[in-house]
Length: 516
Image (cartoon, rainbow, N blue to C red; front, side, top):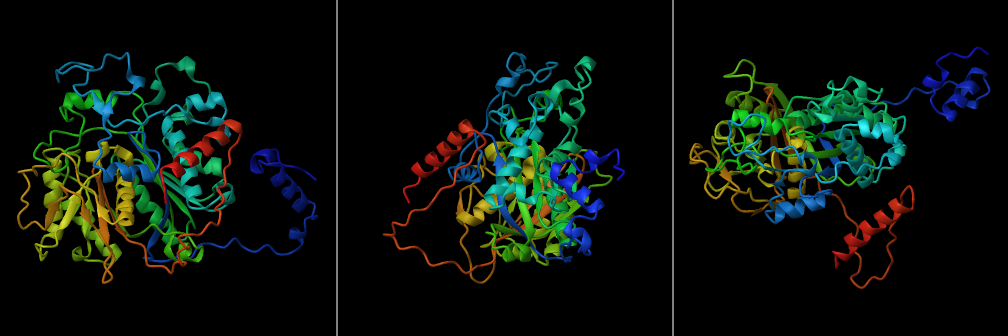
């Protein structure tokens, strides 16, 4: 038997090599009968897409969707001082004209981005050092999202599961400045393509792996592509989301020159006090399936993606300037894809960066879509989570989706911070819009599902809009008797004693905070 020189690469595990050899020698029972073709997911034109799980890493130490909701419900502000990794750079100067400085010294930053368990993911310590923290974060979030969906990550090995992740150019490691430091890991450590490829490689996923960079609309564009791939039968399960980590203060320095940042680092979305963007970091990953597949598999459906759309500004006022007519078109296209009308939407989780130009353009575009024929006692409620955590850039869109899903679950639309006085540059009267200056009940209505739109507009001119709907009602099991003493097992796992104890500690903290 002649073996190919590429045997170890084509069949990278002992089991795969054994299967190959048995087939070649005609000794495998499977080799003696015709092999069935691998079934492909069914093609559907417009089937809703189910969100069956979510995971996130956000400023303020938020590492679960539940913690994110606690922040939103309390009207919390997760923006804080500059991170430790920038200490010693002498970055701050209140003078906007100071070269190489930032007049802002606050933002939304992730904690412990260096705390990556490389061994858990089979990454060597040397390679882990070269990996952009963005790759590390989406690995963690993807694993957690699958676990929260009740899916063993190793069960997806060899499946057509897709990965669609939004990110922007990496500033990790000052690539290109030190040629002597190139060791074979550096290029893959900061390559944007590897952000999605790393997840597929680690989990053994063989569906599409796509990294999207359309600037601040990246994660919502990734979500749009993932939903379409599921409908087209390119994958049965998809991981979709985005990530941004600012390893260096380059963005702060650049936007100081442009005078485009809020001095206090906060996005004052649609507010009279809006004075620029407040930059943030973040990561979010959703697990998606076609709705019929999720119901077939008995998944808990958190929300449904009814429709989405993506477009471009084209030749507008400037390369980076927002364009109202294009924003109108993308919202209308998403509604058309969802087979809905503007009257079917209750709320908009807006892009809302808190700039004196961008916010009025966005509100004006939304008013053109939702204002005509809208009853004054039922406005479209407008808000933005950027007021709580800052602008998470490539992760901003998926963060907005997570917020809407949580709002559906808790039947509440959270307030938007810093909006005591709405922007005077927006014609609010008869616009069909109302700013979420306070949280509002968003209870279920037996006559129609609750729905919200999520918008993201990229610096590149690429716009995206997604329509989110509450999940369909499902038959539920009868509630347990209040005096039931049936024990409920908690499964705890970890690769090593330290990890096992840490996981047990997380469970203990979670249980101790819940008397029910």
